[in-house]
Image (cartoon, rainbow, N blue to C red; front, side, top):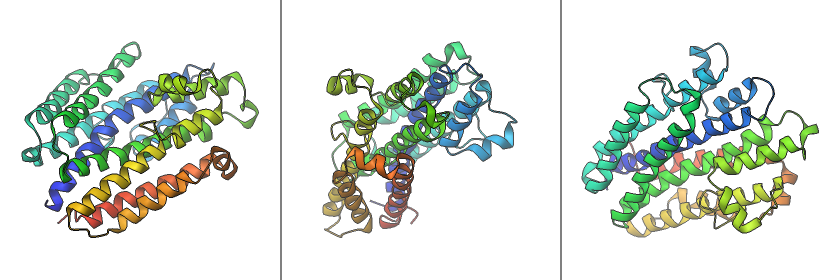
Length: 314
């Protein structure tokens, strides 16, 4: 496969996953702001910082009120990571690699883009926000479901999956980090009812609340929730699950392209081994923020190496 086509597939699915994950971050800000008696500006500021667009936001806005943040993250054309911007980018990539996609996949991307363009044509009222966020997640999930149901399991499939799981791992780490390091007002709140509510919100934002209860019942402690989202191999948004998918898809590409061992596979293998060799107590001993910062740096390095190994820009 040409590098530019591999790049188109990889980034198409990174952008689709990002649209869903941005919606999750907005939901995190919305729900966590409701747990505070104050106006929640600190929560909204941390959400923008977690999305990686704080500087761009401040170029357009003076403060972090809910309406401005929601509009910037969902609709703004000045924000390349807004839901509308990344769905635009996903559709552009899908058009570039259209011959590599089934008709159902292409139509679901195009219809999703048209649906969101209409729904996000005007600022979203807070009362409508839950329905809009649900719609964004459904549009992304529809494409993913049709991709699973209609595509061959070949190199095309693997590049798309690498894009999905690179973005997903990045987002899960960021959602955990925004809760533990930024949103908790002070260490005096650790173990309080506010702390516990915020941890449960993290599960909701990762669509993991029901799955967590199946495995852990009512034991919704910070340690058990962090363990679930970092080290639970059966949780499809956990860091260890994503790392396993990196290895599987990179190994498939290795075999598909004549057995050439790429540096990206070494990074993925090392990451998976580190996750498999750690307990949640060790993670907290390192420091959750420090651990997640290192994980995010590794994910960024892996993404860049995949682009290099498979000559995305040639």
